[in-house]
Structures are given as structure tokens and as C-alpha cells.
Length: 71
Image (tube, rainbow, N blue to C red):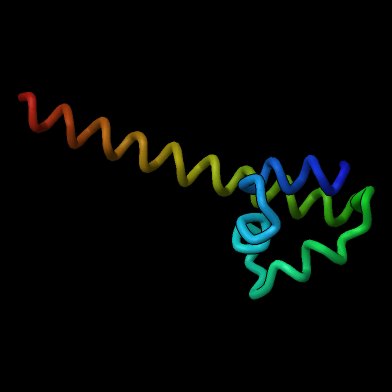
């Protein structure tokens, strides 16, 4: 995976990518190689799945709340 692709998947900026990966500083993203190792690619994919799961839960909770209001 390319570093550019990973950053896009993790929010679009090095700061958002760092936050998604649990890093304290965006500097960690800047020192990634241009082509990520398999280990780092796996960590990025895991973070993306976690983010997608959180978004799905938020969407589900929002839809349930709206359904309850209209009932």
C-alpha cells in the first residue's frame, strides 16, 4: 500500500491519519516509507475497519433514535 493511499483511507491528512492510528504526533506518519510494509499495511487496514465499524454503530444509533422519535 502506498503511504498516500493509507493517509486518504485514514482521513485525508497526516494529522487525521495519526489520530486514527493512535499516534500522539503526525510526525510518525511523515516517517512512513512511501510503500508501506505488510505489517504497517495490516495496521492501517485494521484502523480503517475499526473506523468503519464505529461509523456504522453511530449511523445505526442515529437511525434508531429517529425511528423512536417518529413512533
